[in-house]
Image (cartoon, rainbow, N blue to C red; front, top):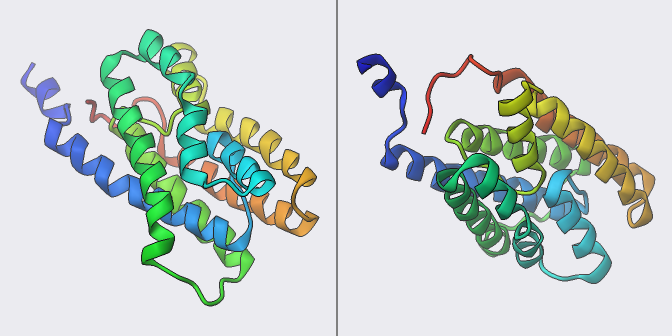
Length: 203
């Protein structure tokens, strides 16, 4: 019983993870926005809407996630849902503020794709390990892993590639190919590091 208790994250640890992971994700989103790239999952859909309408990424990302909280509550519990809601809200906020705090005179698209994917992947990994997510497809990916032992990273990769290929409607081929490379890096980080039973800390 003592050993199991020590494996649980405290409320402070969960809070620190949220405020560490979400600016990291937002930085990756800023790289993508600067280079006119996109990623997968719900963020990818938000990028598609942004490029087609010029609406802000943050508000679109926040609204797109709203329907998934029902599944999160029913399948993953209120703690997971609350932390995910907070994570999505913080990413939406930081995604709007980061370009005001950091500006790039020039960013090579290939560098933006790879480093942006790394930043988002590491941020998502931190959230996953503290029983939170960035909503949308992430919620479904975590549920499938917990219920059917389907790797969250592999499921996410399949969905992400479908979304990124949809970007051919709004982005040139070279930007889509770089977006695919970034999505691959992101999901490789999750696949290699988020395996059932490997990380024992829970919230």
